[in-house]
Length: 82
Image 1 (cartoon, rainbow, N blue to C red):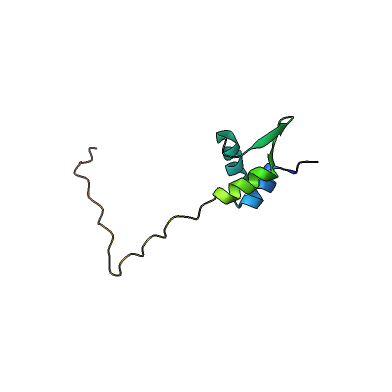
Image 2 (image 1 turned 60 degrees about the vertical axis):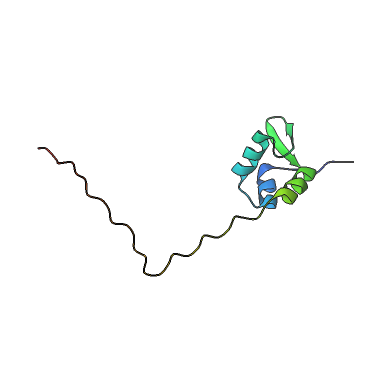
């Protein structure tokens, strides 16, 4: 039986992340891969496992209250010498 291997770009598309993130996951050992020559290929099983582990993004930030103003910039107490 032949294993299905995915390139970094293909795995990134399936996991909805960037190819750089897939390479980072491989380097950290978060996702299984096979090295063929100088290239890393992600196995289909590893992608399925990573999809199961993937969490939803954190809570959305609360909207700012209306009428809230930004704090004013502080003036420097230092004098400029010529």
